[in-house]
Image 1 (tube, rainbow, N blue to C red):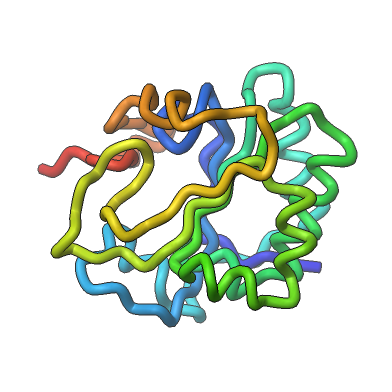
Image 2: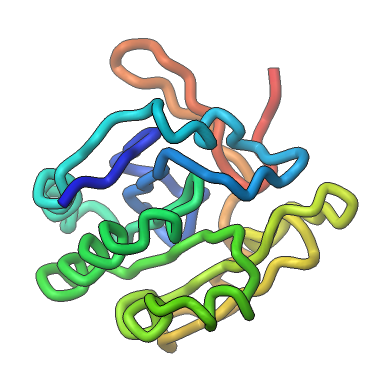
Length: 185
């Protein structure tokens, strides 16, 4: 099974508690005005990654990271592959899991994939970005978004303590701006 990715970041401190691997999926049809990641929307861009290969890359970092964050794009528009990856992470590593989705909490709860998510995700952040309600705090881009803790591994205080922004420079010289309040040029 493959997952269409925009990017994979092996280490970040602004996309969830502690140092985390971050998987940005490619493809989103929600089209939230003001989205920070519009380049992740197109379904025909990005690259296909076998779930096995992604799991291997993540598991190799298990001693250096606390968890994995799945963001996007829209992860739940690739729910089968995302659930497969997260299930295998939970079964084979001690890593925590956090998922961002633009779907609202009622929409997520109505999805057939919801029971699986509730078993394999520690924290899920739900809701479309609404620029008119921008707060950029505690991993929430806008005030309408909701946070759902499926385990007691983290609390809201843990999310509130996450740095707001991060700049990463790849070995190839690419600059990545990330976080809930990313810096701009």
